[in-house]
Length: 403
Ligand code: TRP
Ligand code: SF4
Image: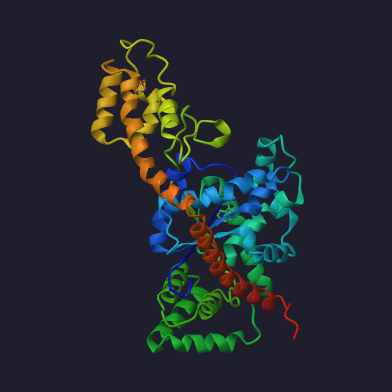
């Protein structure tokens, strides 16, 4: 929860190359929706990229500004979302280090991506301390902003799970303040008589009867209180379970709807498969790439009927075409009434139309690097304000403020 009363959302992207249509349809469009509803923090995860690209970090340097420009060009709005670069908020490193003190090695070793990625990226030596610590750095990213929701793909859900476990442990170890009870009583009063009574009743029902519903209701009650501070809300939330003040809330993964975006060859669109159309691809290249896309192999001659479900071009129609066009494709393909090049034409048009305004806006930012630097500087500052506050709390809770 932020001071604005909106829930916080945080997400990061690794700067390891050009963004493509898969990122746009899979991730960025989701960000555009989220930024309307939540207080969003979106950041360039350059340290995360370094865990795998440490031997040659040049790709990171090349990608950072391009990625920010891509975000802005598709409509990520720096007026509502805070955009920043991870390494400009060094508090993330401090928090990861402190969390590391109490995080068992086995928790990190059993995160599935640890072994998976080592196998997949076998050309890289990922038996490093940095790579093992990747999910803990991600935990620090998330909880630094007390984000309630983290939009991620399926592959990242286990990282958010780890974050939840780390939070639970941290709150358990360091959560209780010496004057906790008094603060709780004061906070309850602030809710007014009626709500205070309701809160007590729900807490009792939960603690004595174990009614899960009562817990949920009590949490909802707290969410709806406008006149209590973040700290008080966390105390009251902690008091429900009989614990202390929860310094960090447990984040939840907000599963990004699986991207419908398939690559040019019918596999998932991904840089490593070389089947992408980049977000600001040159129009001639877009046309060439679509024209040369493989189609249903059954259609050798124009007179051979085909089956759209066996054709990667059909996947693109799912994203770009209206019902009428899709009917035209099915009819034309299965009855051999249209050629594959005809079938591809509306797609070329649709992709170019989609990219036109994106390219235009990107060019504006490319020609005005000062504005882009300024947006990031502002975002970093806003992020750092929150990060400094969080770290004060963390140092305090861990007894690291020596007066
Ligand atoms: N690990 C994420 C990925 O590879 C990127 C990332 C880093 C992230 N920190 C994050 C995503 C925090 C969400 C929240 O895509
Ligand atoms: Fe694919 Fe269209 Fe050719 Fe059918 S007509 S095989 S859907 S490109």
